[in-house]
Image (cartoon, rainbow, N blue to C red; front, side, top):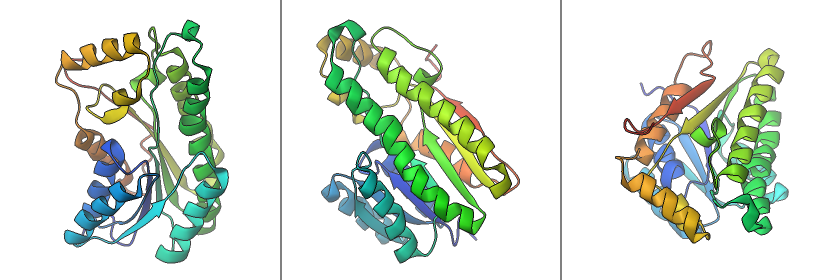
Length: 247
């Protein structure tokens, strides 16, 4: 029997990278997966692969920065799949730049997606999980949630926030038997760097990644699968995962 048979997992930001790999990994463990993102065409391709491997999948077009859409996502999953056992808050953006570049629109975008979007989906999921008296919330942070470097100050601020929110969330919900895990990847070969508008910051991060053998999305997905397949008595609070050659 697969470890997640009968469970329902919701993955945000599932149209690429870590979210996409996580959906496939949890489906392989037997979970019914709800994949959510703005790019519906990418979700449909993912859904076809999961279904082709015998999995059950629900595709939901959703922008988590819209509180109503984030809440509707969770309600739709409960309505159509019957429950919500796992929420992986993976949707995120990394728009690196020095603070004195004054890219305030990008600051707002990062806080909207990385922090508020996470909170909106979590808020709705908590209602369901408390009724169930079980559930697991996995928040994707970053090594930047522990260490700040030039050009990552605002991005790190969002990920420090994710770590703090995750710790508070776990402590608030001990009596309801809810589990909370924060995942902190180092350099991962994903499309995150493609969206950086500041050339100086983009060149620096791409140069760093090109000098190492970065993590693949599947490596992070495997860490998530490890955390959510532990016995109910086990809460994996935090996983820091980096490439072997990243200092």
